[in-house]
Length: 388
Image (cartoon, rainbow, N blue to C red; front, top):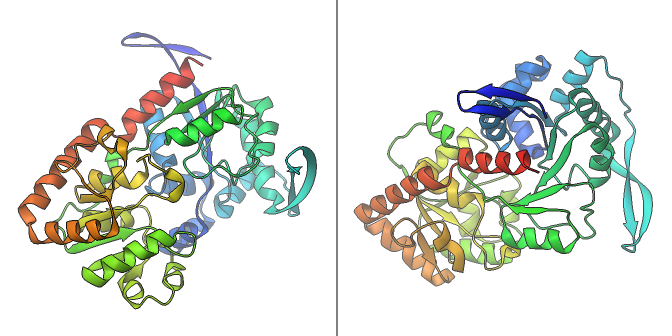
């Protein structure tokens, strides 16, 4: 890797390419908010996307550039952005469906036709070939498949992946030199699958958010931001109990309204979808932010909401996990519950005791801004890949 000299001596300057995908609902809202973007140049579109505070790719790009690295961002499934890049570079691509390798019976390689448009793979491959990164980081391990990453390796120095959700059955770890996860259990699962190297990189809060939202006093008593539905049966029961007892506002994808099913309390609590800056503003405007981990998390606390809710300065009420004390001082910086009934009781108590609620929320924010910022996590990431 090329070296340059800073105030403290020789520093390695890396070319880092970040590949990710977006939720389709977010993309719809993103271009609805600024319709003129869809016909803008690639540089204008990608800059706006990086500044949206949706996901982590914009934060990674910002802090890595701040450290002196050259960074390129790829939103693999964003058609306006990707087609703008291809058009400006004179890149031709196929409109047919993509092909990818699957393992039949878990052991036999088989080429299958995918519903994914071929242009997604063609353009991403062209972007990696053009940039030739020292580090290629895939932040969308499911939607940017291992077979595609394996093809990209010839144009990249180091290939790494970041994943924080359930690992798909039969996932191929072989194209990756390093796999990162914010969840220690998932990291262990990657190791069991034969990953060359696995690192735990906890989730965090991008403190730049506080410069882009209003830091006004809370106006919403209790908020849950996320999804509900059949795949989260425990979450539905939990929300139903809370909505029947307290003034809960639910923000999530539009489909959430139908996922609420026949529960009138949950349906009534649903407000609308919020993404990026708007999501963080809703969290900031809430006295209490609710969190419940997905089932795959098991007994390990580490999801984005822990740091997002505390980061904006709201009181985090979250499900107890044995390692929660690794991140926060319980009942001084956050509030943990052990059951649905306990959660309902804790929320009621802190709605009635404003001074205590505010004190814990302020302490939680101080802890996150001191220990759990995205800037700190990216320094850890850069140190790992720099010495790999």
